[in-house]
Image (tube, rainbow, N blue to C red):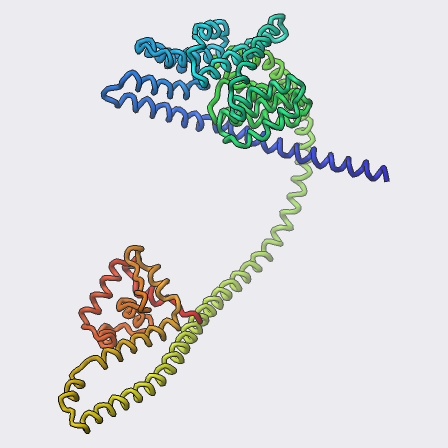
Length: 551
């Protein structure tokens, strides 16, 4: 029993590992594809930048406040993309703030410049710039940014001073400003999550940090810089807690988000390259590390450049050695392949001879198949036409049965009505009410009522055969031209005209006689609807395709 249990647990773990590896491989494919499309993402960012600059150039007059706002937009686009351009626009905003004597603008611009200085390795200059700001003048949001910028600079400085005696000093300052952030930042916000989770890890509460980050990162779009930062922190915490596969998964997700967001000041791709190197995936590690170094050089991120330059020669040398080994193995395979090719050539010659014999037989079979195919197509066409004929006959029979039945009923009803009408007239004549008789004969009320009932019967008969006629008819005309019968009628005059056409009565004179309109009126209705329909060339043919419920 115990052995079975161990076997079950082992199998379950193996399945989980295989599934996790499959997910990692899929993510690496996405990352490779994303790197291949780097130019596309950069073009999109450059297009946004050009649009912002174009709006600035096309303005006849621009206030300093408006220029400050536009410079801020350009800084946001350049901040993680090209540091020199970001510094240019933030320096201009510092000039504008001094010119306008606006301390709020000045403090905001200084903090953003300090952030750029920290990213490019100018730590002392960034700290000095931040210390020149009077923190008492800052709003709550600005104070949060102020502390976070300090924290980021000391983090970069601590990473740069790795294994140096001064590193602990920078880390202690980092922890101080982290505590300051946590005292004022809103719980649950992005700044809170990215600041509090490293604090939890430092306190040995890595599982709580993972749980918070896992829950929060699902709220973010995977193409944003915030997503890249959160997943990068997740990868670091998973590394610290010994979950190597999860570390790799989130490093890949972070790297993908960095590339899609055109973030040149990045760290995840370099960290992923080191991880892959340790696992022996030298080719990918070499590609990713070179790409990471290119980004660092492009951005002028001194820390990332140093970090990449430490590992790149090691990875590149190992990759070259692996390539040489592969080439030696390839040469052996080439010799074996040549011998096999010679044997294969002899086998192919023999097979070709046999295939020629088979080809002749196959060609004869193909000719027979083609003839059968042609006969099948002819039979299919005959069956289709027969089916259409059967449908037409079925519909015609249904129309005939419907109208013959109704015709017999109508004849009987009209005979009774005429008999009643005759008795009424006879009664008036017998009683000598000549004037009343003359008045009755002159009145059209009887005819109008009969016509109304006749049209109602026609509408009911037609719609019993073609219940969806109005709906399908309106599908042939634009929305604004659709015909909707009133509440007390089933068909309008226009619909009755085309109902008669659907029944095969296409002569305008016959339609006019049936509906008691002039031929000109009938022609006008037909032409107007045809010209306004969606099928001007074959409108009435489309009407004829409207089928009955029995078809």
